[in-house]
Amino acid sequence: MRVVLCGYYGMGNGGDEALLATLLQMLPPHVTPVVLSGNPTETTRRYGVAAVPRKSFGAVVSALRQADGLIWGGGSLMQDATSALNPIYYGGLMAIAQLLGLKTLAWAQGIGPLNRAWASWLTRQLLRGCTGVSVRDRASAQLLATWGVDAIQAPDPVWALTGESGADLWQIPAPRVVVALRAHPWLTEARLAQLTEAFVTLQAQTGWAIALVPFQPSRDRPIAAAIQPHLPGPSQILTVSDPRQLKGLFQGAELAIAMRLHALIMAAAEGCRCFALSYDPKVTQLMADQAMAGWEMDPEGIDATRTIADLRPWPTTAAAMVEQWLDLQAPDLDPSATAQAALAHQALLKKVLSE
Image (cartoon, rainbow, N blue to C red; front, side):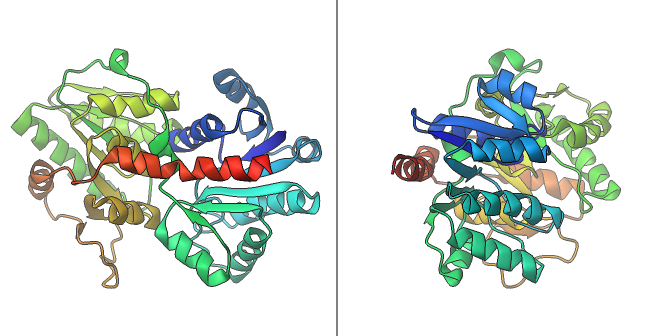
C-alpha cells in the first residue's frame, strides 16, 4: 500500500519533523510512505523514504494518483490564524484525494482556530469525508462532536516518539535549563529583555547552565543569539536536526522553559519539569491536560472563561519570574501513561490502512 503523507514537513521545524518521525514510526510495515516535503532531498536522506516537493502541483498530483491513501500528518494544519493559505493548501490536497477515491486520514490533528466561515465549512466537509480522524486535544474533539464527525482523541503522538540520548551534544555541565522561544508579536523587545534579565538572575542564584534550543532555527536562532551574550554562566545555543535526538536532549535537563509546543511535549515525556509561555490555544490546552504551569502571553490578559488553574499573568519583574521557576514542582502525572495513550493514533493507522 502506497500512502502520501502531508504536513509541514521539510521546513526546518523541529516539532513538525518530530510528528513526521513519529508517523513513520507508527505506520504499519506494509505501508510505503511518500512524503510531501519542503526539502525532499533532506527528508529522503534523514528518514530513508520517498519524498516529492510539496509546492510542485504536478509532482503532488502525480504522487496522489499513484497512491492508495493520503494522511494529513499531525499538527494544526486546518487553521487560518497564521494564514488563510493553510486551509486552501491542505484542504485542497484532501479534496483531491477524496475525489480520487483514496483512503483519507486526518491524523493527530489540532483543529483551528478557524476565523473565516468558509475555512470552517471546508474543514467540516472534508473531515466528514475522511476514512478516519484522530485529534490531539479536547477542544478539537468537542468541536468535531458539534459537527457530527466521529474522531478518536489521544495525546499528541510525539509523546510516544522514541528519544535518543543527546549526551554527546552537550557542551555545558548539569544541571541544565533548556529554553525554546519563538518569534511572535507577543514576545516583544521589552519581554525578551525581561526574560534575559531573569535568565541572568537564575544563573546568579543557582549556577545552572542554560541551553538555548531553536526548534525552527531560521526563526528562533536570532532570539537565542540575542540572549546568550548576556548570560554570565555556562550557556550553549544547541541546534538539533534529528527529532529523536531533540527529544532525547531533555533527558539531560532539569527544567524546560518554552513557547514551542513540542518542546514542552518532549520535555514532559522525558520527565523534565516544564514551564510554558502560552502564545497559542494549543499550548494552553496542553497545560490544561498536563497540569503544567505557565504564563499567558496575550497582552489582553487571561480570559476569565478559562479554567486552567496554573495559567498565570505575565510577571511584572524578572525577580518574580525566577521565583516562580524555582518554586516549580513536577506535576503528579505519569509520562509513560500519556505516551501509552498516544498509541491510539497508531491503532487508528493500523485499522484504516489495513481495511
